[in-house]
Image (cartoon, rainbow, N blue to C red; front, side, top):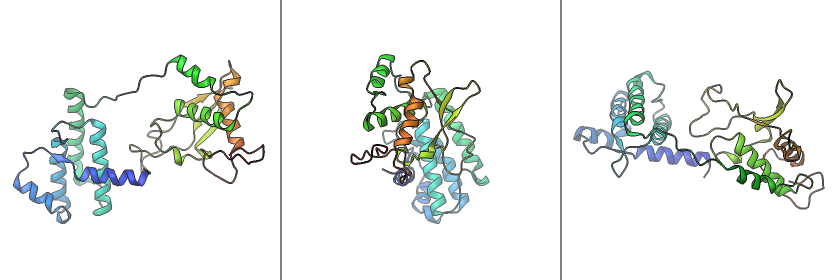
Length: 251
């Protein structure tokens, strides 16, 4: 599913989210004629929605889910009614209510915590790195080694937006101590970072440093080698191996 499909699904989900069953007949009537409501009436409904949004099971949403719903509503109204429920001053109270609900979830219900994956063990990392033979790198193992290294050191949202990565997405630089490193030059868009965000709010400041103790398994050297093997006529970073290429090209 591409980014546009995800956004449409988010909008559809947000528009169909359930409120608590104590909705008044007046509120339900307004929801049924959603397209005809004024901005003031919609602001009132959004004020009522954030504290009362519930899953089908009746339970509370987590912070991440509620944030996704809010983003979906924002896009829905920007597309259908051409106003922004987050930046419009008329929705100031709605935004304050949203923040209050998030604090409530975090303080009393434990639904705002981030659930991290288990860390990769040292022996598992060693096994992954052993699959790459720098003395005779074949296209498949080289690409996998570079992909894993970038994912492990630099990518914050898993495999999201991998197909959008370009050659220019990552660059090599040198720090003050003279050590080489790879960094994310172009920040990808994801569900929490959109085109109208300030790029300095969440810049990709992670670094993948060269391995001076074991140059044979250096991720920076592998990245530079990988870039040199890419098909120059294609801008994509993750290219498919072509077997009948000249030796100096592998993808």
